[in-house]
Image (tube, rainbow, N blue to C red):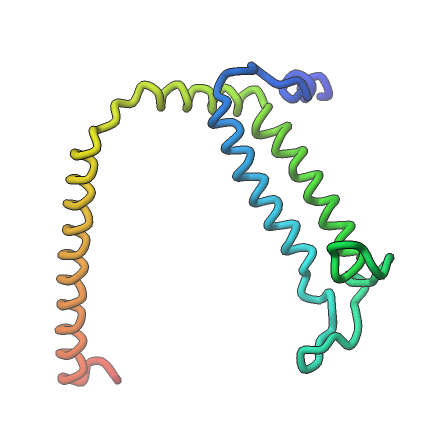
Length: 163
């Protein structure tokens, strides 16, 4: 089992120079999700007990270990320590299992190679197609809204729908 993990996941960068943009972009976006999750964990709802907007006590999650730290208004709390550890573990997992995992890295390398082969339309064709799509959406949306209003009015007048 350990040999299988060692073969698939290593700290050495797998296939350097290939698929760099897709691998690091995917990793950065996932690390932002990890950052959001760890920040939400830090601001756990039960961290402080509030009464009329004033802190009247702290739960065990918000218990201060060190009262003052530069740049951190709440001081060093249990929640801060746990959320930093979760952030570091999440970033390590993103690096090992997303950016550097052999199967996923090969997939992302293939995605980047395929994106280079795509024939992208010229700007004027792209703008024209976008305008057609937006106008079509506006027309269809207006039609559906009109039909909805008519049906609602008919249903209210006939008493089939309570209002």
